[in-house]
Structures are given as structure tokens and as C-alpha cells.
Amino acid sequence: MNRFDGGMREAKIRYQDGDYQILLAGSHVICAVTGRQIPVDELRYWSVARQEAYSDAAASLEAERRAGGLPDQA
Image (cartoon, rainbow, N blue to C red; front, top):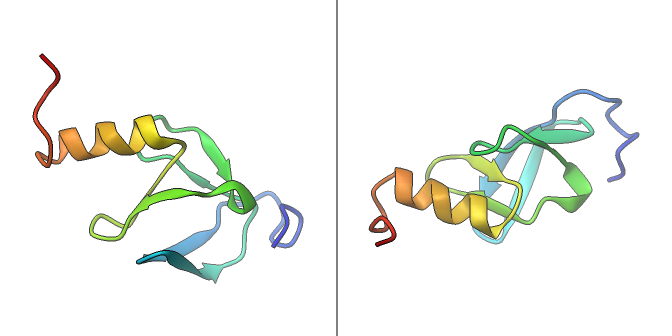
């Protein structure tokens, strides 16, 4: 999918293990940590349990910390 398939609206996605299912076509999703737009064709990080997208590995790690899955850095 490219960014023009769904216009400039937010996509609705069901995040699965190792893949995702597009429920409503769109150009991007929103990072749950940073609030940045992530083009759907660049989406690489998400949480199946929380059904959230992340802009990068650092945002994913921060989400795990906030959820209590990892200890805070010392």
C-alpha cells in the first residue's frame, strides 16, 4: 500500500503477531508515544496487546516501560 491509497487520513489497523490487517485504508497511523504520523508503508513497530503503533524502537521501549513491562532506567 502506498500513502495515496487511502488519501491523507489515518488508517485503522488491527495489529497482529508479525503482521497487521488494514481495517480502513489511510496514509498513516499515529505513534502512541510521540504523537507523530507514521506512513503505513513505513510501519515497523507495534504492540499486539495494546493495539498501538510506534514510530521507532525507542518509542516502543518507552511504551513497554509505561505499561510496567520494563524497569525505569537507573
